[in-house]
Length: 169
Picture 1 (cartoon, rainbow, N blue to C red):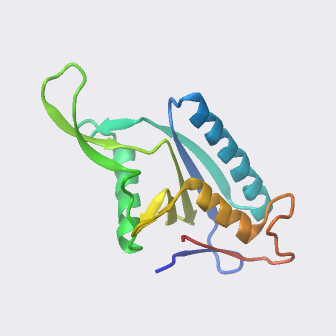
Picture 2: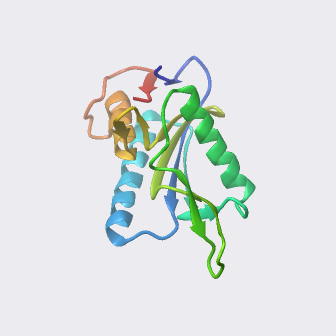
């Protein structure tokens, strides 16, 4: 089942949230900076409601996990279940040692970067994800947005529409 985001007369504003880990090695940080620039270009061309940027940790103990992160992971998991997609291996629950302790607990491990697309308050797509053996990266999500709404350079832009549709591949 393909989920769609429609921007135009049908109501509801489209917004994107880009999540990134707090600390990233330089090659990954450069990749994320490039993603941020591309996302801003798409936002300007598509006149999206907003683009938000959030940071998150590498992993969080489920015992100590803050409500915001638990709610977000639940929302992403519900989207994946509803759309017959999987968040693993990008998101995972792993049994790890707590720092300075001898017992192991469950930890939520988060990807280095993640793109969530919303229409109004409804989550429409999460990148990265996978469907069967096909993996979709954050760049795949941006590529699809660029093809759909165009870029400032006009690549993939269809002139004159007041509406665009984004399929979460």
